[in-house]
Length: 222
Length: 343
Ligand SMILES: Nc1ncnc2c1ncn2[C@@H]1O[C@H](COP(=O)(O)OP(=O)(O)OP(=O)(O)O)[C@@H](O)[C@H]1O
Ligand SMILES: [Mg+2]
Image 1 (cartoon, chains in turn blue, green):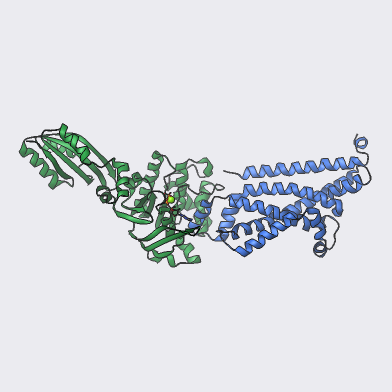
Image 2 (cartoon, rainbow over the protein chains, first blue to last red):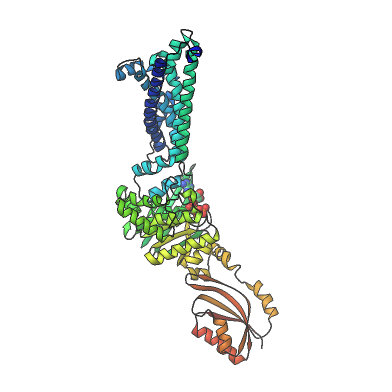
């Protein structure tokens, strides 16, 4: 049955491609989460009337975020080739895709983080201040926990964009399902491979969406 | 306890200067419940936020328990803030934390060790009467319960001062009374100085010892709650007193009464913090051979006793009536005013 429907799909090749896609996605989500939260916090804290109000730092951070959000992902990969070569030592394979994936997604997520933080009730921040809290306490015990559901649904949206990016990176040599679909499916005209790759990617997207929604819902005590 | 000297706060919006608090000088005694009343925009919130430096003063000085709050920086200010509790109109609880965890938050900030923290949280939960709701999230509580959490949280680090900005304005009258009772309880039990901001005279009447009336950033009238009730000087103050007493009796109101009751003596009794002679009328009619007819009046109860006026008609022998009036004048704190005497 499998062989009749998908004559060219090899289980081990499909498995490896899926594994690589997962690998790229998970690592880049982790990187995006950390870098995005840093960027978002920086944007939030340095803005006007913010806790660390600083015009220049805000301008620089905002410029960085806006520029990297404006660059199309495929071009970002090319642009980062020299950097990738230095950091990772190669421009092929799943690892090589990571710098571009993280730099492509983190600015987007950073904006979502900023919005999430802005939505934290100012009164609560004020109450913490009135209790004599340090800025660090306000960050880690008020701002981040209070915005956690929004941070989680933000990373879910970003993760799904990242899965799309991994496929794009795959098509230019980063491995994973995008690579499999493009080289083994499209270029050899074995469309069954393209179809199976698509189905697997859609399933991965659904899994991430499901997990993200579940966690966000669980965290939300409002 | 708290001494405020020439305190001002100016905001500048679009080149326009707003004096939210204008050269305010004030002393608040230890253990007092000090009410600040004023209409919206009078500068009450700004004033109370200046006290713990949530707002930076433009000029002036604030001393709390001998410490100069206005001169403090960084860590010193943070430590001082731990000794000033604050409760808010909209409670400002962390929704991501349970009741217990919310109350523990200021203790975490103060670096209280975990076991001690848990013990203190339990004490506070008892104090504000929230036993059984320790593990509820704020979203599962009523407004009154949320404010109880707010109060417990504000008291966690044993502050010397409690600031309340419209702490009951989001609550219904019944809940408001319960929360006010709790504040009085805390004031008496812990000897805490409370500064309470409100726009409801009812709140001042019920729990405050002293009151200051704010208008356009200044305190226009200040004093013992009873005195202010009895002799409001400023137009704003009169309006606030009317909130509770109804219109203060002026001649228009007296005229028709006098016309109707054209016999004996018409007397106005002023109750000023009277507590011991609440049965005054029945005492009089028992002790003296007179009849007393209550015509009109309004008595309300403040922290310092009953306050209000009563119009009564006295009928009987001249000598008996005079004796009764002399009794009231000499033996009680009630003021007597004979406004009409028909022979
Ligand atoms: N952060 C701010 N920036 C600019 N103006 C402000 C700010 N906070 C308060 N004001 C102004 O200061 C004045 C006093 O405001 P405040 O909030 O102290 O009044 P309030 O007496 O507490 O009123 P309410 O009863 O409505 O709470 C108002 O004119 C207000 O517009
Ligand atoms: Mg206010």
